[in-house]
Length: 169
Image 1 (cartoon, rainbow, N blue to C red):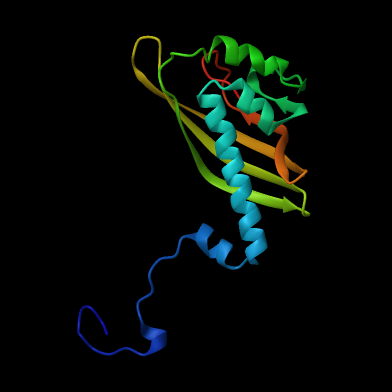
Image 2: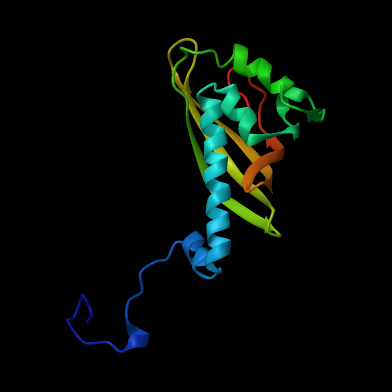
């Protein structure tokens, strides 16, 4: 029934509600692929939460010991392991700092067989700077995940954006 005229419309004439393109893509996938894609988004959110909370122990549990990365702070160099990241956890993310909030925009997951996946997204990070002013930073990130012993581990990431001394990986 038309909202404007009250007339009955045939099926092909009915008004259609707009559909979220991400939802539409998920509806076209088998359930196992949807579940794995959701797992990758969730473990990525858990990793970012560990970073925001300055929880290096949780971070290292989610990351492979041989983690590799390209990021602005490494000045174009490939970093291997978590020692480079430990510095930021111990200094820039010291306990008692102002809260940090992160939003992952438009996460796109590529499944690479049953045991690997790649996620790409925009990361918006909100924080309070040293003078008490709210700030937002943006970075573009890609993370590669590998499942070992039924557990997803981050094995590589690439982060683009401006280097920062206040917020890490």
